[in-house]
Length: 468
Image 1 (cartoon, one colour):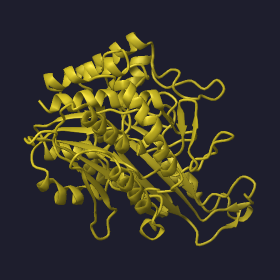
Image 2 (cartoon, rainbow, N blue to C red; image 1 turned 30 degrees about the vertical axis):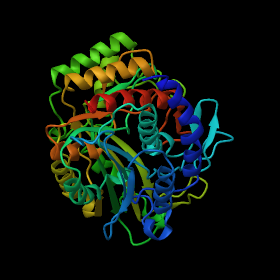
Image 3 (cartoon, one colour; image 1 turned 60 degrees about the vertical axis):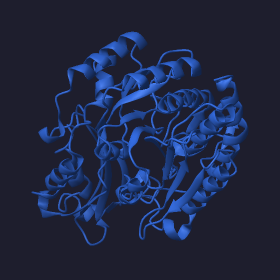
Image 4 (spheres, rainbow, N blue to C red; image 1 turned 45 degrees about the vertical axis):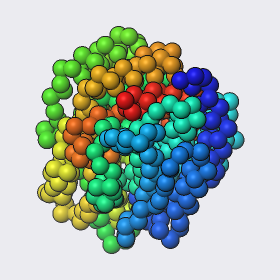
């Protein structure tokens, strides 16, 4: 494949980046963060933007359409026939274009919804998670077609509710999959790795539960001098409920139904990565002051991130700002948590038991309302077939100069578990351009272009190998 990396770099910088800059200006929040998504039309605008751009690419036989189901977010489907007459088994590729909100302040000169290229970093909400994925796939197939390199039947789907837990995906797949036929390989570009020196292939993903608990003790706020010591604090009751899940001293998750025995292979993999990379998580996060990381050492931190449960408090209602806080005992407190689950825990069963745990024996008989989003199931990858392992290694050497590596991911991609049930015999690859400093979901999210170019180069090798 002559000048593959050079040509893909040119295509990404000249064609993909301008598309992403246009996409960046669309506040296409996932439905969990925009309940009126259908009326606002932002998700539709983003899908049409992508479909129009894809329609301009020079790929023989490419077709695209937006699949619609009443009451659900739409799905963009792109079908590319194989380069020869024999279609064979398909490769199913996945990306999403719905976004997380942007509530934290971004650095001077940066705006979450005004994408900006600064040297090799393209800043903006959704750039690396996961707006780049679909156009990158198309750029790869277009370059293979231009060079006359064979590629298989490819079906690319672009989801619009991944950041909400993919509640609409099963319904879309039920309608779509009978039209695809057998699938040999599933590729997801919504992941990443520990550095930008090689392609990282995800060996496991944690599950995720997003739950809101509202504790109400009064019909309205009252004078704290009169009520303090008499009326219980809704915040304290909420904190008590959360202490049923998490040890507030250590951060350890307490319920046994959220624990698993970590497979020895993954424990050994964490030890190996820590030895080779020197505590790879140590410098990954912008720690404040003298704050220390959790975990005994690098390997323990990797296992904390990928195979142990963890709780994050991600939202609160009913609490005024410090500037606006008066001497009032507040009527309610609502807390929103994200609970990451070990990859093999049944997410739906865990959610049912967790809701029961938070809803029973409430202190002071306070009123508690629980709202749970669609649970995200974790996933464990099987070993890649020999042809795929070789293609990943060759592609990583071509794209980065180093062989591919494998590691677990602390995040969740519900699509992987869903497709694993549909295609138990297929190979799966979860990879992507996320890495140190990408900061998906946070301020200053960015796509590092050399990483995207490396991913694209590797994907080209994989698609060529899948056509044999």
